[in-house]
Image (cartoon, rainbow, N blue to C red; front, side, top):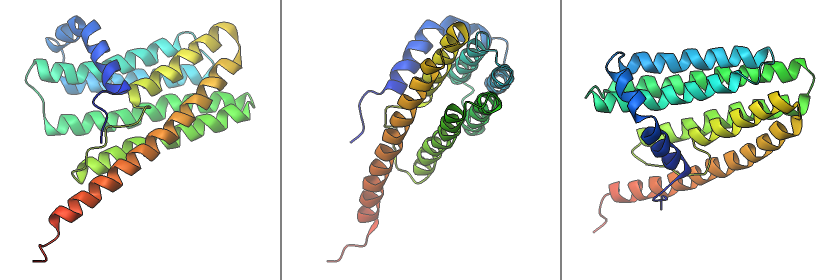
Length: 213
């Protein structure tokens, strides 16, 4: 059974409520797909800043990318421009954005020879992609699996905030500890989704099976 409330839903509702006026203004100027494109651009800038070791400004740019990711859907609903392509583009843009900022971070820590952190960032990239792929593939098969503790908004928060603190204090254990937590939660989320998909798939197969009577 799926959770009636999730961290993902809570963070999205909070952000939507707090920044709703900005989304309304953006909707009067830009299309939802253009705002989605802005989220990719902001994530690319954040990735570049991370690659050169700018961890004070970079996390704020990543935070802005996350807000664009919320605003595009908000604008689509406010302006009645929800579309099938928009949903596809938004999902694809999330994967591209994740790649940009993660790759920049991976490059920096590999270059600094902080290899355990670089390895964990690489693991973060793989697990994040798997979590999103599993959900998208399941929904394509008609099985909902919006479960698990580490949905994308929380992933961004647990990635960007510790990096910002690291940029201010130069204490690598802040980011290292956050990565430990993120990887544990990622495994929980992936396992939880696989279990839900397995049960949902069995139910679909059972309901589709011909009646033996």
